[in-house]
Image (cartoon, one colour):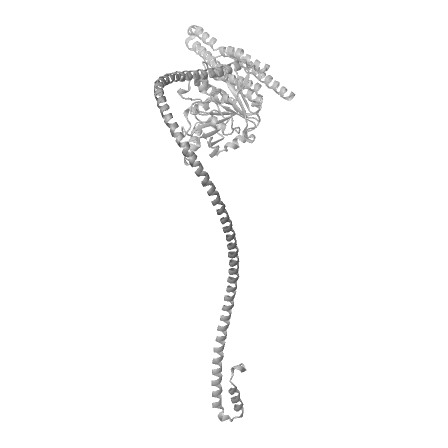
Amino acid sequence: MMPELLPPSLFDRLGKLARLFVWRRKSLHDAIVEELYLAGTRHETLAGEHQDTLARLQSLTQEHGHLTERLIATDAELAQARQDSQSLQHTLDQTREHHQRDDELARMHFDSLASRHSQIVGERNAIELAHQTLEQMLEEARTELGEKSAALIALQQSLAQAQDVHQKLATEFNALEQRHGDTWTRFQLISRLLAARPTESAGLTRFRQLLAKDYMAFAESDSSLGAEAKALLMLQSIEQELGLLVGVPDVFKRTIVGIVGGFSSGKSEFINSFILDHEIRLAVGLQPVTAIPSYVLATDERLIRGYSANGGYIELGVEFYKSISHAFINSFSFDLKSLMPFMCVGIQMDPAYFSNICFIDTPGYNPPATAGECSQSDKATAVQFAQQSGAIVWLIGLDVTGTVPNSDLKFIQEIGVEHRSVYVVLNKADLRPEDDLEFIMDEVESVLTYENIPIVGISAYSSTLRRVFTHRGQPLMDYFARINQQSDARKHLESRLKEVFDMYEEAIQSGIAANRQQKLAINGLQLDALEIGGAGLYEKMLETIAKFDQKLDTAPLEKSLKESRRMLDAFTDAIQQTTESLEEEASVA
């Protein structure tokens, strides 16, 4: 216990306690305890007061800090206010000076206005006098104007009549000018096509001579083949391929891909979706627009050519190429396709997929009746050019049907798919709900399986969006990447030529076998007549049997077979001569 907290009397008692007897220690002890208790109470009281004093001291210290900060801020504000006051006083002094100057200027301006007012009053009086004079002159002018208005109305009526006549004449002139321009365009096209000189090729010339003379004579003498029209179309198609090979050798180094489909299936727009040059687009529309087949291939430089029937070609402009549709062809008095059977368009496309591909954009083979007379040959044209292809991309427009049209099936079977890969594109897929596309693909696959038409793959595609929605089998662009390779032009043409004469070989051999079988049957009939009816019946039947036997002579068919093989060799030699000549020219270049 701290000494200062105990009273002095406690120390005295403690001294006494040491000197007292034991029996008096109890009272002394109690007194000491009471004093100690009182001392503890005082100590607690003093300790509490001490804590309160410390808390007050801390609060006062904080308040002193706040007041010090406020004092500093107040001094800064007072200094800023003092500075602002001085600035305002300076501004007020300047304003007072400006106000004094403005008062002086206002007085000077007022004096000037007063002088001007006096002048204007004088001018007003003069104007009023002039106004009265003008009123008199105006009244005279009104009278004169009334007289001239009647004459003006008459002139306006005459002018309106003259304008009507001029408008009619201008309309007639524009129509004549347009007709003259179209006529001049058609005249230039025909003149250039007729003047186009074919590229010299001895092999091609030989092939054309064989087709025009030897083959036609053979076809007239032989009646074994029932599909002679198909054979002729195939040979003419090979002739066109040879002509194109001579004119554009690069075409038949590529895989020929026929883009086929009915009217409005979107063939041209399908090819457009792969063209990178935005200035060139194959013509598209609701009416038939692909009138003349076009070979479309990827090239570094733009190339547009129209090929004449004699094998020559002319260069065409972009705008003119876009205008060549059924409507343009129908404006001629003859079928332009007989003069310009096909065109070739070289354009920029992605080389990863199309560097070694040549598309054939064919006409729709089932155009509507409103398309014009020239459209009636579209099917034959489409078949002829589709047969040139080594691969087929078959377009079915989903805006018209949800399955395979019967006309498409007949067309595909007519061109034949035995030696070609076929890829089906369900075009305009963006016009159908995506949930329906799988069902449509199931339906198409079912029809193709039933018709025994093998396909590599099938895709639901939008040419306008350039997007494949879904596919079965090989994806569309993977298919293009796979067939994007150089082809052997000679092998391709010889294969097509062999296909034609294989039909003759099969038909003639079948005829020979049939005649021999019938002759065996007649010989058996002779033996039966001799055995059953005797010599009398045999002699009666002998003349008739001889006539049948003469008709069943296989010698003419064997001669036709020999001639067919000879022509196959001759046509093959012409193809080889053409391709070898081109290869030599390429090696020299």
